[in-house]
Image (tube, rainbow, N blue to C red):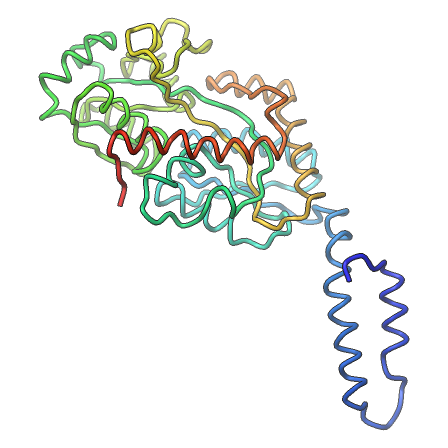
Length: 353
């Protein structure tokens, strides 16, 4: 049925529909009419809708609160993406459950291209192991579109914590862990897991204080109500530059070009430890391939726009290499990331429910 051309369906409709008559149509005629109606529903909206998509505004679900790193990245992309698609891309913040609430809503949306989610390593990899019963299967309940950027995670402490580098922090934590607290953007987020895995690697047990997003977690750190957080570069760089918090380490092997004076965890002795987050776009499962491809191309063009690149650079966000931007690559990458995080989470004995 899906291979029928529009003209063929219309011809079939004319041939099968009963002619004008004062007599009531027979049962067979009604069945024929129903068959044609079904054919019209199945055939006409598919390729035709995909070819002309989008014809109305598109919703970009950010599964975290306003002001978070996901929100910042989403809004940087949305403005240029709106221009390229010819329709407004509306950013909608749908937080909760470590990003699962908004992601779940996007997974259950109509597969017509008018709602997608900006997923992260937390929403589409780590939570598959962290939660006993996650709301969705990240590998099968979405149509992968494009992997866009990666961000380093930074270990930052309150300004008066008696530690100026990672080794001093480790020594202080081993002695004072019972009275220390670390904040996060919420249970199950990538930054929460970064600190939890860091604690496990250092052999310390510190109380976790979850917040509704990165900004309030940082505000309490600045106020001295918590001792440290692991934060994405996007939200923490302004506070580092204003000396409101103390940066102790980039939790990756290499330093960040945006924070060149902050030594990496690797070069400070914590070899083979890596904590970063990535951002990717996912549509609901079953979205037509032409729509996936068109959105993929629009996002890549957006990422290649100099003004967008400059804004991302200011936040310490790195674009992924061109060969990592296809839907197929993202699909395989999600599977590998689920496995990678599963090993680390199980080894650390972490659970969120």
